[in-house]
Image 1 (cartoon, rainbow, N blue to C red):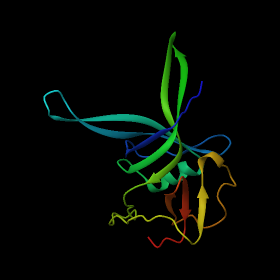
Image 2: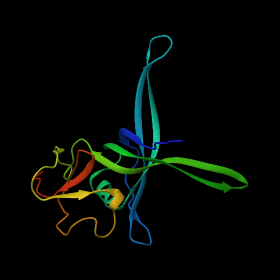
Image 3: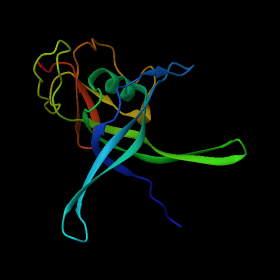
Image 4: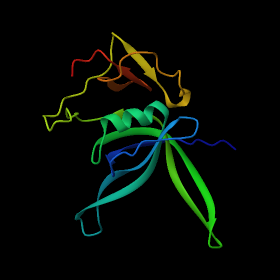
Length: 166
């Protein structure tokens, strides 16, 4: 029997990012994305419903999210569902969440000093580097100055471009 495990979400981060590292120095951050849905009820009135989906970022993707995003930031993610199960006080418990494989930062970025939001552009020619959470690790990013990078998705992959002037 065939199966397919892919999730695509577009929403806003629920909390500020807390970046942590594993013992093997892999960056990890857990958060949730608020996804809004609008539909008509039986009487024809519009109802807004919000679903909160837990997400986990690993490696360089987690570092990028912690550097560029905060509570309320819009984000587009693609990943796979994972279920953790455990037992607490004799009761079996489980939690379903998304492991993020690819992401797209949306909206603008502030300069950290309360300035205006700066727009994002897609990565193109220049000093562009590939970031893919499936191939994370110490050597996943090439050497370079990461202080003012631009991140975007081109096709199915996430790219980092250090030459973006904004």
